[in-house]
Every structure is written in C-alpha cells, then in structure tokens.
Image 1: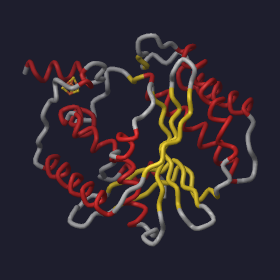
Image 2 (image 1 turned 45 degrees about the horizontal axis):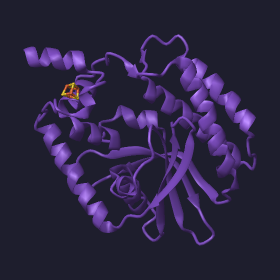
Image 3 (image 1 turned 90 degrees about the vertical axis):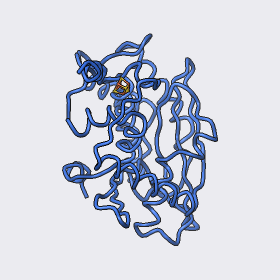
Image 4 (image 1 turned 60 degrees about the horizontal axis):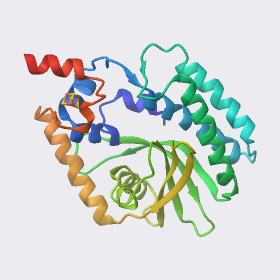
Length: 266
Ligand code: SF4
C-alpha cells in the first residue's frame, strides 16, 4: 500500500483533523482550495529530514546492520543540504538559519544514537501506511506509523518520532489524538487481540539536545471518543463550516495569513 496513492483519494488524516480543529479556515485554504502557502516552515522541512534519517536507521537495523553515529551524521548532512540549502520557500523561525539547524540536527541525532541501538525489540514495520475505515463514515482515515515493534510476548509498540522545541508533558502524551488513532487503527486492522504500547520518541531542540521516550496507553474508551470527534469533523467539513480561529497561537507564523487577511477584507 503506497501512501502517495492513498493520498490521491478523498481521505481524512490526523493532521487534517487537527488542522480543522485548530483553525477550520486554514483547513479550507490548505485542503479544499489547495492554495499555495506563503512559505514553508523550517520546522516542517527539518522534521521531515530527521524522520527520513530515522527511517533509514531502522531499515538498516531491521536487516541486522546498526549504522554508526558518523554514518547517520553524514546522511543527515546530505539530506538537509538537498532539502534546505538555497530553498527560497523556507521561512526560518527567529534564531534559526540553515547552518544552526544543520548543527542542531547533527547533535540531536548523536543524542539519539547514544541510546536507541541498545533496543533489541523486533521491528515489524517502518513508515507503515494504514487505512482505517470507520463505521458510518464514507471516507477513510489514512496515516503512517513511523515504527512498529514487537517484543517476545507479542506486545506491539507503536512509535511516533517528534522533533520539538521543548519536552512533552506526560499529560500531553496521555491525551494525544494521534496516538489514539494509531491504537484504534492497529486494533481495527488485525491486532485486536494484542497488547499495544504507544510512545513518542522525542528529539528535543534545546541548546544541549535531548532524547526522551515517553510511553502511554489507550483503551476502547479513548477510541470511541476519537471516532466521535472524527465524525463531527467530517460532518463540519461536508456542511462547509469553516471558521477562522483568529485568536489562536497559530496565527503568528500561519503560512496562509495573506489569504486570511484577504478573506476578512472581503
Ligand atoms: S491567520 Fe489565524 S485565523 Fe487566519 S487562517 Fe491562519 S490560523 Fe486561521
């Protein structure tokens, strides 16, 4: 199953649902009107780059080859240069430049490498696309799980990688919608009888980068709440309910601000 093919069909995803909830007008600009954003954020490009390197690390690990820190560093440098060097679409956040993020990425990946190779769980899937069909909904929810591992007892651990400016609070992880969807999708797609652990592997962009693994759990109650929310979002989209959330923290740095200003004037 190819995620690019899946994305060509009408679908919902965790990011589209979060986008609709954060600001449904921004959702409309981006996903209904398909407007070109004013810019691409440095965090988006940087995060994608780190994800690709971690996926490559896991691919090699699955084949029994643990890449060295130097190899990971060189892969990141090449990928970052290709993605970001002389890219006029990127808007850097305050204090960030091509070079500061290059250095930061290298340090973050070295921090990651100090701990993760010791993990000896069996890798089941890397960057695994999934489709979740929801009863009563005429559109599927699709996504990609960064990493799925299995221990000796058959317990699955689903990992999502995060690059963030600060450490995540446990309460944030415990209520995170994305992990609830992953749990629900895994249960619906052949793993109903398995115990499932969920975790964020966080690479934190502090001055001295940190790597934290935060575990959490979900139950059928969490799934039921998430499904209700997904259905309500889809109902709002179908009915054309698109409301600007113009007091949101997202407005500062919104890549659809120029369209939003124009929308308000009209
Ligand atoms: S500027 Fe604010 S209100 Fe306007 S689209 Fe962006 S997030 Fe929504």
